[in-house]
Length: 224
Image 1 (tube, rainbow, N blue to C red):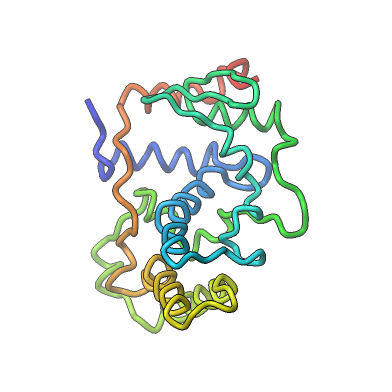
Image 2: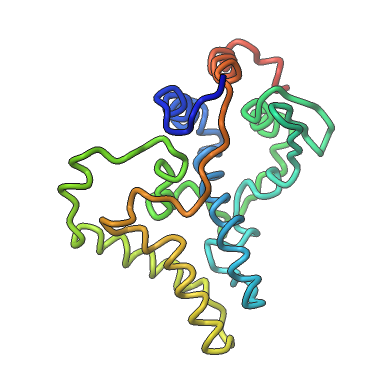
């Protein structure tokens, strides 16, 4: 039996992940992964299409992502086996691998003034909507006013204004600006707010969902 990504059980599972197990090292790994997925699947190909490098000060720069090194050291063997490429240890869920990284490989968490937590930008990326844990109610749509969206849309554009490299051709610059707006900022409108730029999340089996949530606090040896 599989959970549909819009089913109540699936939403409860993801709410649990976001609110109960998300915050490790002061930055939510789960919410950061939502942002990172948008960047990896949608934004990096945009830069590649115009042969541009992401500026150092841009929030999209991988060198600023606090968890980027650890994320690169993960290996997933479907459906639910996760391995640490640093020491080779395996885990039954990504959650335990995250705890393992915190307990055993904390030196692979980036430090420094320019390091950032991608989850801090969830208001721009609409993490709960992209992850499928928040859906529109009737009144959310009916009472939506475009002017209420303007402030965050403008802030979004200001944040990404540092992400367009200098010296590009006019066409390349326009492609990046329009692409970043289309992938992130333009969703801050009444028409598109509840949509997502990504494909729907993978289904999660009921047994795995129940097992993962129910064992979070009862198997500390699993993430050592």
